[in-house]
Length: 308
Image (cartoon, rainbow, N blue to C red; front, side, top):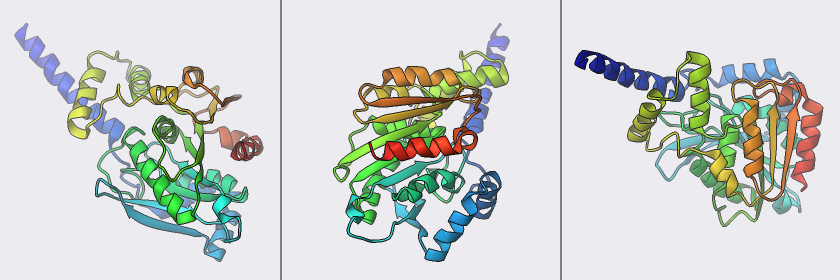
């Protein structure tokens, strides 16, 4: 009996290390910006002429900043032409997904730039060209985005923001939405596209769907390991808890055929949000493909949301 217990303990500990690395290890190719641009254009060829135009005008730039943690983080930005209305132009922050890069979400940035917004696209901790040893699933990323908002307010001389995230970027967006905004931000609204209710819920779902395993004991021990290594647990990383505290308008988008972040998650998120909100369920859409499947309607809905 003691031998069986020892074997089970060793297997659980080993499984916890494997699961944590599987879920939170950064993409080994994340710094290959040329590959990211190729993937973007292959998936969204309509973006290529726009990118060429931005580059011809010198409008697409990138920058590095030092976070309060001391890490160097990277981001892209697009500044609208200077005019008398510059201080009144909104800043759109576009937040990428899990193990992705800001580059791959420039099709979303295009919507905002063409609507007259300044745009900022950060590479999150452990993604793209930003430093970081592990994916944070949107939880600690919320603090980085709040700092980027302060940077953007100074960079663009603006105080009006839209924060738009997809997948893990949507979870990040919702986690930001439950925090007190920086003093530089006078107005803000949010767009979450296919985000999860909590890291616990998402990992529990994936553990069952991908590996056929129950929550206990592996999810519990892996969460404890995450707390020990990275300072946060799966239970505390809860977009739905943050949404309950959100006092700002939020647009929820989710495909009804999403089997990665399951479609049902959007409904408790939407119900948890008090105050101004909208819900758009895209028919037949898989994970993070609402823009791909409905580009014109997606663009129109975002342009309407900008001016709320």
